[in-house]
Image 1: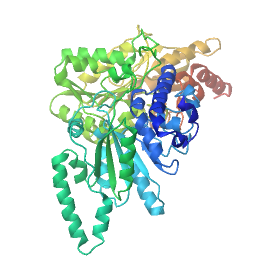
Image 2: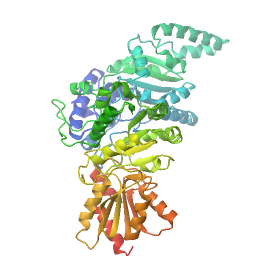
Image 3: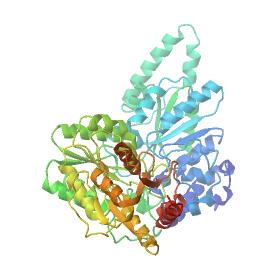
Length: 622
């Protein structure tokens, strides 16, 4: 394999050009083989093989810089920068990240993981370059899915004022996780079907501009060029009107065409956008046919693409999906909203059943939330289904557009807590802290699958903002006998004894039961309370616990700072009660990738570690 000769940055430049197609095939074969064993983001990476190769051929890394939007399409980049061996432990505990990481390589210049950020970051690096007086080339690679995010246009608006080189590559495959929706994809589609046009070279402008009356002549030429170009590529004019030079469309699987476009783009003393057309999943038929499934895939059979692990037990997202359909049947005011995550958030069935009440707004969480506020003001009951780490992007909209007006918007927050292999950028461990800060917001988290169903029904009936937060993975099916009706701000006893009381919220109730079992061989008596609500807290329950228990432990799959445990401490302080409380949760640092069990053990949030911490605390006499 020619890939065997790629062992460090720059080795691709030693490969004969007539062997580039063979190298591209080798890379695809390598990616399919490795990701089939570890899981990972396959479709996007198969689509950018040639584009990445062309960038590495035309740029001088690590001096030149590539910023990958989101970053889950950087696998070929990692291969070409000497990290082939890392793929055996891709996204595993202690292994190589599935996203760009500056700590891994000096060729990763910016850590990414969320969408629509690359143009802003690239523009900042361009301005830093210009102020330093250096000459490196800066390239931001952004997908058309990411271009549905408003932040990208904020950056383009500023990039249009540049008078130095900045290359933006639009990787257009008509997909984000699933097929893109809205006006931007339609706009780009009109460009895909038009004739490519590169325009006049910036060097001609510069030569004319230096002559007498040059500015006037340049202005006339540009206006004439734009009039002609508007006939050739009318849709591409949007970028030109923003002050960004448009080049393309370019075949994203033709290395020669890509290199030519990049060479052309480097000559401009302005921001340049190269529109590249690629196919997500290219080279692997199952990934082409099922792009959503192979966006982020579990291990699979390479012969047919079928997942190796067949899940037979319902996950939290599956429960949400089922309940959403029932809510839609019972109430025609229920509306579902997603930010390009219909499959991931479990809204596919609702979309198929109630298409007129389903809205996919693209990768635009801020818009999704304010859009929901407008729907609520109009008399509907919007449910915004979103991953925890992505809701962070809409903090201001939740606070000002929903909570300030006390509007009945339900936030169905998937992937709350540790999520595992995607690492720091995707761990949903901050939501309890930032949501409980907001006036009027109600925050709940279920202990099991039945409680998730009950909480969603309560949330839809409640006349105000409600967040229902649940984790990734298999839904806990224990404690079916504990199903007290959901009442605002009220928790429930799971078991009551004198001695220690563990107050747990959400999926940490299951952990609390395991801790109790581990402590049964000691003289310690353990009560367990299912908190249910992070806000409002059950004041009566907490005061009752203080009367009958010498020691309280709070458990949450959220950062300790400002979380559920902090709320308990604040309440006790307000009441003037002195009680020993141990708050256990996520420490004040970012948590890398690994299995959830591995990560919990590392941070002391697994049952054994919790039991040990309790015994140690009590042995010290509190």
